[in-house]
Image (cartoon, rainbow, N blue to C red):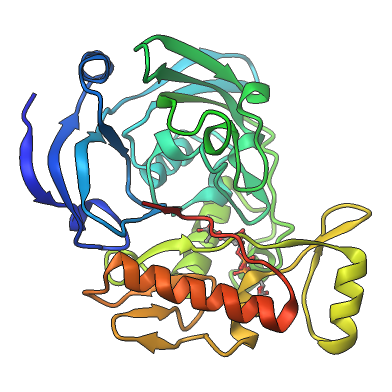
Length: 335
Ligand code: EPU
């Protein structure tokens, strides 16, 4: 094991925050990982670094999970079970599935991050979440080094949520994830307006999974900043869920407020709209800012500190709360 000391984590988090790790090592195998966690009391797990905001230096041994491998572990006439190691880049994994004509993950193209962290916040986009194709995951319990397999019900998936953000937060390290994907008769989901208009623009009548992926890639590139160019962590907040009665009350005052019905009693309101209405869209405060095309995304123009980004997030929360009476919940992990 090669441990580096006092290294910058700037290139290991998509926000590009220049926080330091007192010790850092890259993990290439599950056995190496088990050996370290039983011997080290103070560890910090770093995956793709795409869903975290570092507001301080880390005084622990940072384990950068870099395990690789994609394997077909079982096949039927119609489905395939594919296992990907935690350190595989999410988008490269999605492209691998599309190349092999395995359907189910195409709407999740271009989401930053790695396979191992995808179940933690049940990543989702354009009408699909990973819970829809998730089969099982393998993990290691940090306290004991014991292996455990979780099925979907044990993960308790919700909107940008799972057991790993709640009861089991910080207790397990996910080492691989198995997805159940279609080999034929793909269950395409292009109900989302932006995908439909992109398909129409391209005059595609009978889309393939590759067509859907190509559309999603173009939509994301047109709206969301590329972390390689401008530091960011995707959506910084969750879209709030409010009661229909609260929504009606707001609609009387703000006629254009958008919403998505999620049950008989509740609707989801796009946080991006609320933030834009509060005047933050495209605003810059030093090197911390709100993206000009999607207000849900906070950005680092270069040298913002995690604390500056966090202070901006808190200002946004205050203003949205005083204007609309809606608390905005942060989706990114604040460290
Ligand atoms: N909107 C505005 N102003 C903005 C941004 C959005 O008015 O600055 C309104 C518009 O009415 C727009 C609506 O919000 O039609 C929805 O916007 P968008 O389609 O961009 O989706 P979102 O609800 O803002 C969610 C996810 C994204 C995901 C998209 C597409 C969350 C927290 N975010 O955003 O996920 O890509 O839907 O499915 O649920 C991520 O998690 O990092 C992420 C990017």
